[in-house]
Length: 151
Image 1 (cartoon, rainbow, N blue to C red):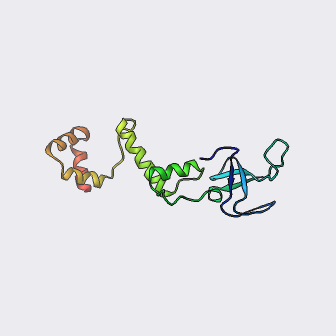
Image 2: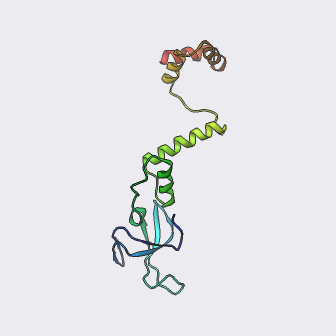
Image 3: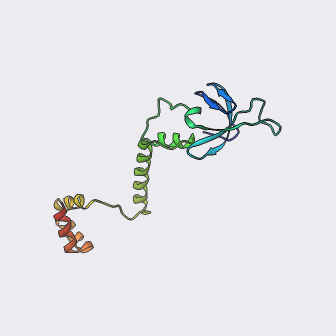
Protein backbone atom coordinates (compact mmCIF):
# COMPACT_ATOMS: atom_id res chain seq x y z
CA UNK A 1 0.00 0.00 0.00
CA UNK A 2 1.20 3.49 -0.82
CA UNK A 3 1.72 5.65 2.22
CA UNK A 4 2.71 9.29 2.02
CA UNK A 5 6.32 10.05 2.99
CA UNK A 6 7.26 6.42 2.43
CA UNK A 7 10.41 5.62 0.45
CA UNK A 8 10.08 3.48 -2.68
CA UNK A 9 12.82 2.41 -5.10
CA UNK A 10 12.28 3.06 -8.79
CA UNK A 11 11.83 -0.09 -10.89
CA UNK A 12 12.63 1.66 -14.17
CA UNK A 13 14.55 4.75 -15.24
CA UNK A 14 12.86 8.13 -15.36
CA UNK A 15 14.07 11.26 -17.13
CA UNK A 16 13.53 14.52 -15.25
CA UNK A 17 14.68 18.13 -15.63
CA UNK A 18 17.33 17.30 -12.99
CA UNK A 19 18.71 14.27 -14.80
CA UNK A 20 17.98 10.58 -15.22
CA UNK A 21 17.16 8.52 -12.16
CA UNK A 22 17.95 4.83 -12.49
CA UNK A 23 16.23 1.74 -11.07
CA UNK A 24 16.88 1.34 -7.36
CA UNK A 25 16.98 5.08 -6.66
CA UNK A 26 14.71 5.77 -3.69
CA UNK A 27 12.03 8.42 -3.99
CA UNK A 28 9.58 9.66 -1.38
CA UNK A 29 5.87 9.46 -2.16
CA UNK A 30 4.15 12.82 -1.63
CA UNK A 31 0.61 12.39 -2.99
CA UNK A 32 -1.47 11.15 -5.88
CA UNK A 33 -1.47 13.25 -9.05
CA UNK A 34 -3.84 13.71 -12.00
CA UNK A 35 -3.94 11.10 -14.77
CA UNK A 36 -3.01 8.23 -12.43
CA UNK A 37 0.31 9.79 -11.52
CA UNK A 38 2.12 9.75 -8.23
CA UNK A 39 3.98 12.85 -7.05
CA UNK A 40 7.34 11.97 -5.57
CA UNK A 41 10.24 13.86 -4.05
CA UNK A 42 13.59 13.26 -5.70
CA UNK A 43 15.78 14.85 -3.03
CA UNK A 44 18.99 13.08 -2.09
CA UNK A 45 19.79 14.83 1.21
CA UNK A 46 16.86 13.63 3.29
CA UNK A 47 13.28 14.73 3.57
CA UNK A 48 13.35 17.45 6.19
CA UNK A 49 12.02 21.03 6.13
CA UNK A 50 15.44 22.30 5.07
CA UNK A 51 15.96 19.68 2.33
CA UNK A 52 15.72 20.46 -1.36
CA UNK A 53 12.82 18.52 -2.78
CA UNK A 54 12.51 18.16 -6.53
CA UNK A 55 8.87 17.21 -7.02
CA UNK A 56 8.15 15.06 -10.06
CA UNK A 57 5.16 13.05 -11.23
CA UNK A 58 5.82 9.41 -12.04
CA UNK A 59 3.49 6.63 -13.16
CA UNK A 60 2.69 3.65 -10.95
CA UNK A 61 4.70 1.42 -13.30
CA UNK A 62 7.81 3.45 -12.42
CA UNK A 63 7.50 2.31 -8.79
CA UNK A 64 5.79 -1.08 -8.89
CA UNK A 65 5.85 -4.27 -10.90
CA UNK A 66 2.72 -6.38 -11.22
CA UNK A 67 3.08 -9.47 -8.98
CA UNK A 68 3.01 -12.79 -10.86
CA UNK A 69 0.60 -14.36 -8.36
CA UNK A 70 -2.19 -11.78 -8.83
CA UNK A 71 -4.49 -12.18 -11.83
CA UNK A 72 -6.25 -9.34 -13.62
CA UNK A 73 -10.05 -9.47 -13.58
CA UNK A 74 -10.25 -10.52 -9.93
CA UNK A 75 -11.12 -8.67 -6.72
CA UNK A 76 -7.47 -8.89 -5.65
CA UNK A 77 -6.33 -7.48 -9.00
CA UNK A 78 -8.70 -4.52 -8.74
CA UNK A 79 -7.61 -3.84 -5.15
CA UNK A 80 -3.95 -3.96 -6.19
CA UNK A 81 -4.54 -1.31 -8.87
CA UNK A 82 -6.31 0.97 -6.38
CA UNK A 83 -3.76 0.40 -3.62
CA UNK A 84 -0.91 1.45 -5.90
CA UNK A 85 -2.70 4.57 -7.20
CA UNK A 86 -3.10 3.36 -10.76
CA UNK A 87 -6.26 3.16 -12.84
CA UNK A 88 -7.66 -0.37 -13.00
CA UNK A 89 -7.21 -2.20 -16.29
CA UNK A 90 -10.27 -3.05 -18.40
CA UNK A 91 -10.47 -6.60 -17.04
CA UNK A 92 -10.33 -5.49 -13.40
CA UNK A 93 -12.74 -2.58 -13.94
CA UNK A 94 -15.29 -4.82 -15.69
CA UNK A 95 -15.11 -7.52 -13.01
CA UNK A 96 -15.47 -4.91 -10.25
CA UNK A 97 -18.47 -3.19 -11.85
CA UNK A 98 -20.28 -6.51 -12.46
CA UNK A 99 -19.62 -7.64 -8.89
CA UNK A 100 -20.80 -4.33 -7.44
CA UNK A 101 -23.95 -4.36 -9.60
CA UNK A 102 -24.81 -7.85 -8.36
CA UNK A 103 -24.23 -6.71 -4.78
CA UNK A 104 -26.52 -3.68 -5.25
CA UNK A 105 -29.27 -5.89 -6.71
CA UNK A 106 -28.97 -8.41 -3.85
CA UNK A 107 -29.19 -5.70 -1.19
CA UNK A 108 -32.05 -3.88 -2.90
CA UNK A 109 -30.02 -0.71 -3.54
CA UNK A 110 -30.65 -1.17 -7.28
CA UNK A 111 -34.18 -2.05 -8.35
CA UNK A 112 -33.43 -3.45 -11.80
CA UNK A 113 -31.20 -3.54 -14.85
CA UNK A 114 -31.55 -2.70 -18.53
CA UNK A 115 -32.13 -5.76 -20.69
CA UNK A 116 -32.16 -5.79 -24.51
CA UNK A 117 -35.70 -6.34 -25.76
CA UNK A 118 -34.59 -9.24 -27.97
CA UNK A 119 -33.20 -11.10 -24.96
CA UNK A 120 -36.31 -10.38 -22.90
CA UNK A 121 -38.47 -11.66 -25.77
CA UNK A 122 -36.48 -14.90 -25.86
CA UNK A 123 -36.93 -15.30 -22.12
CA UNK A 124 -40.68 -14.79 -22.49
CA UNK A 125 -40.90 -17.40 -25.25
CA UNK A 126 -39.55 -20.01 -22.84
CA UNK A 127 -41.40 -18.74 -19.77
CA UNK A 128 -44.06 -20.56 -17.76
CA UNK A 129 -47.71 -19.53 -17.87
CA UNK A 130 -47.31 -17.89 -14.45
CA UNK A 131 -44.44 -15.78 -15.76
CA UNK A 132 -46.53 -14.77 -18.80
CA UNK A 133 -49.36 -13.68 -16.54
CA UNK A 134 -46.99 -11.65 -14.37
CA UNK A 135 -45.41 -10.03 -17.44
CA UNK A 136 -48.84 -9.02 -18.73
CA UNK A 137 -49.76 -7.67 -15.30
CA UNK A 138 -46.55 -5.59 -15.09
CA UNK A 139 -46.24 -4.35 -18.66
CA UNK A 140 -49.56 -5.00 -20.41
CA UNK A 141 -50.41 -7.30 -23.29
CA UNK A 142 -49.27 -4.86 -26.00
CA UNK A 143 -45.76 -4.63 -24.49
CA UNK A 144 -45.48 -8.40 -24.14
CA UNK A 145 -46.52 -8.83 -27.80
CA UNK A 146 -43.96 -6.22 -28.88
CA UNK A 147 -41.21 -8.05 -26.93
CA UNK A 148 -42.16 -11.35 -28.57
CA UNK A 149 -42.05 -9.68 -32.01
CA UNK A 150 -38.54 -8.38 -31.22
CA UNK A 151 -37.23 -11.86 -30.35
